[in-house]
Image (cartoon, rainbow over all chains, first blue to last red; front, side):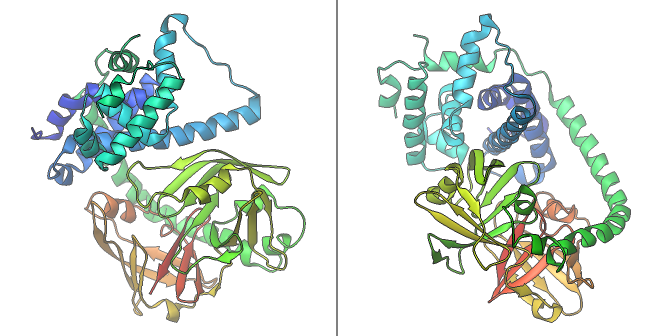
Length: 168
Length: 290
């Protein structure tokens, strides 16, 4: 159902958007920040966004693109930091090790694979829904899903049985 | 083993978002106010800054400036970041006039490889080799996707050098591939005002220079096609200055009118090479054709 205004869009997708962008960036705080930014942009352009087939899909795409930009900047900053101060020290909470491992593995996927994994296995879209959300072909979704699952399998997050692959 | 959807749900966090529609609206309103204030201040600041910007851009073309330094000694990071670079040849073969690829080595270590679909990452020079990190497309949905063999050169730690006998040139060499570039502010020849008049196009931009100093700047494609009227002039140094009044539109028109769509935002170098026009600032270059 198309939201009648930006407030309704915000209320209906903000939790899922934050979750998706947390996975896309590997950082909950960044996910919240980027989700707000994506929703602000939807608010700014509501006259156009409201006429689209899916304002929700547009906002998620903006969010994923923001996450991609953030990752590029973060990588440059990390590199600069390494030049100045040597290897960074990373604090890992042992209790959150599994969560951290999942975030790192998903955030380490190439952009399209990451978006596809989040759309399909976190947001629960099927192939067609994911293709519509990401504005790409269903074949692209299938290929990206297969590659992403293979990468996650190498990280030990996905079991060898190809249950997910057979649902492509 | 925990199913992937459950793992992802846990990793995404199950707590509700720490903001609501009221927060988003407040942020939207604050941004609107700030943009109006910035636009008002920009009228004054741009007038002051253009003088300094024009001075800075004259450097590369001066006989006593960086142009001469390019002809001797090793390539330095400052030289790489002085201007965008336009791809002229791949593996020794000149690229076609319809190929518009450029690369920017920004001084902060930010790398932009623009093939029509921007790939970004970070860069540094290490003993004559270019080291890059995490070079990939900026947007998920941009087309055409960057040619992997081209972007791959940047990821392969190529040697960086000049092309013998060609000032303002750059070559990236791996064991199997070579990319040659010309500096965007040196390519071809300076464009005189009378040769700018007319309509120029790229894949995404349309620019019409009228002889009376008016201008039509458009982005006729995409989700938010728009066109804006403005004015243009060339200063005594030949730099192009474009002024676009603020827009009530949103999206691309808003960006253009706020001066956030380089290379139209400040004094730009304008060069002609055959029937191609290059408009370049220190970070961005756009290639247009009649």
